[in-house]
Amino acid sequence: MADSDLLIIGAGISGLSMAHYAAAAGWSVQILEQEQRVGGCLHSHRFTGPLDGFWLELSAHSAFNSYSNLLAILKSLHALERLQPRAKVGFRLFADGAVRRIPSQLSFSELALALFRLLGLIKTGRSVAEYYGHIVGPRNYAAVFEPAFSAVICQAADEFPADALFNPRPRCKEVPRGFTLPGGLQTLADIVAGSPGIRVERGRTVTRLQNQGEQFIVRTDRGDYTTRALCLATPVAVTSQLLRPEFPKLAEYLMEVKTATVETVGVAIPKSRLTLPLVAGLIGRNEPFLSVVSRDTVPDPSYRGFTFHFRPGELDEAGKRDCIARVLKLSSDLSISMEMIEKINQLPALRVGHGERTQAIDRLLPGSRLALTGNYFTGIAIEDCVARSRQEFARLRQELAGADPPVC
Ligand SMILES: Cc1cc2nc3c(=O)[nH]c(=O)nc-3n(C[C@H](O)[C@H](O)[C@H](O)COP(=O)(O)OP(=O)(O)OC[C@H]3O[C@@H](n4cnc5c(N)ncnc54)[C@H](O)[C@@H]3O)c2cc1C
Image (tube, rainbow, N blue to C red; front, side):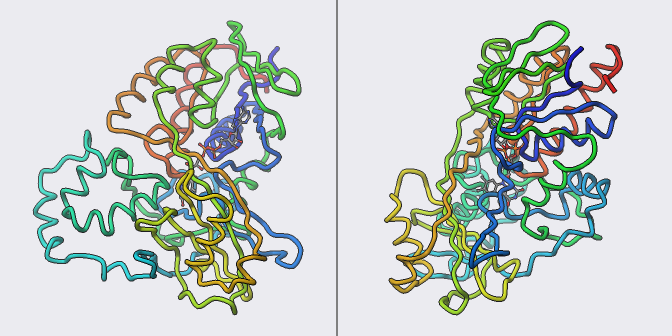
């Protein structure tokens, strides 16, 4: 008999939400996670020592009341009361060496025809540059919209599919429009991982999969596991690599999805040493960073936090330190002594035509006892991941309904 009904590889929000749905259906669920921390891109760095209690986001920073699948999970875990509204502070542009208000960078005469240009224009099959560039006009696109969209998706936006950028969703009015939790979005991952019926084994890197008819054998650096059904909730490149021996066609489709890398650096600065107005973040235009995300949305009495998302390969560590000092106008003593928390973030670099690829992938899955979830299906937002997990679990459940009953 297999060790679990469903084994999930990866404890990011995709894997955790998949685990939630399966555990709620009474399946025995096991997650294997290579890190000691769960959450993947839900990664709130929590300081110790003199800054004890202060945290900042190294990856995802915002969740919204339009994330209905995520909110339903939190509701079922009685965690809605832990949501904290984010303070209403705005984004600004950082361009030509200074912080600028966004409207000051817009050409309103060019924007005047935007609604007219929107008429009849179809998103599907168009890139962000083609679709939004046409609507807002080339000057506005280059001055404001391209940098803003690149900041949102943490990668160059031009070639991203327009229909994967924003997915309109109804809002749940009882919940704050933008929210986080005490300790940051990491807490969300901690809550789901700690909920009943979910076993997470940390520090387990999956290296190989074998499909043995009735069950999968999952090999890790610290032993083997067996499972009736398997879910891969790893980044697309890892998923492709793991699937190659047993599911080469799936691996081939996934290999076509490129990955964008972001070099992230977080810093915490005493409030008294900063003159920068309160901001949700800065959008970089012609800068080595795409964005700077601020902790001002969750104010702290003593410190402010900033997370710089640098374009890959442009600056070394000293260059990043200088850039942070220049943008935040730090004195040289502070710039030399500040602690830099570094992380490499990776996201799928989706391209026009991606929808056809995911449809082809979905046609190969039925009957395989294999589920794929992640941020490389309909979009990269947290809610896109949860929605995909929900859909994949429903498919898997139906597929296994005719098979032997679950272990427990
Ligand atoms: C900088 C940044 C900012 C973002 N901002 C937002 C935002 O504000 N709002 C929003 O909605 N979304 C945001 N996103 C997107 C969103 O956070 C991610 O798309 C989403 O969290 C991805 O979740 P995931 O579970 O699919 O993948 P991941 O979070 O990448 O999780 C994959 C997990 O698999 C594990 N793993 C990998 N290989 C193995 C292996 N071989 N064996 C075992 N485990 C393995 C990894 O350690 C990781 O924990 C942001 C993303 C980034 C990078």
